[in-house]
Length: 211
Image (cartoon, rainbow, N blue to C red):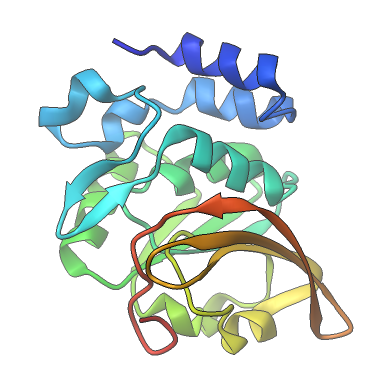
């Protein structure tokens, strides 16, 4: 059975993850609390797992790469599009700390409830799960220091660019339904300056600006 320690050793030795804050958050947040009971023995396998309703919890390496790309700092407000099981939000919440806040949108009611249950059980106070079409962003809590999209999108939705602060970072898998390129973009003078991180595969973004 793959272990947490095995994953950490792999990331550190291969320099896939260099930010110690990201590694520490991974150590402290139990992935086994964010998956279905039937997958418990696979909690630290480096691959996605089904959480029902056609959705998945991303593979640990993907979660770490995306989290590190956000360049998170304590006290930041982060918008996540696609709460899934709540795991990514919990990792981010640990890094931004008690003064920070994570707003995580989820369009599927059953998945939003699953995420809320998981976050509540671990008594994580700085994550707010919202049943909402996140492809439109979440204007009520804007602007955001960071935005992360955890589903494949044809392009980064315009409302998200508008809701991101100047110099803020957005990370999203952009492409078609078969494969996507992870894009890290920084907002400069109301435009996104993009860099590519690598190729990934995600479930499709639903909603107005999704598939």
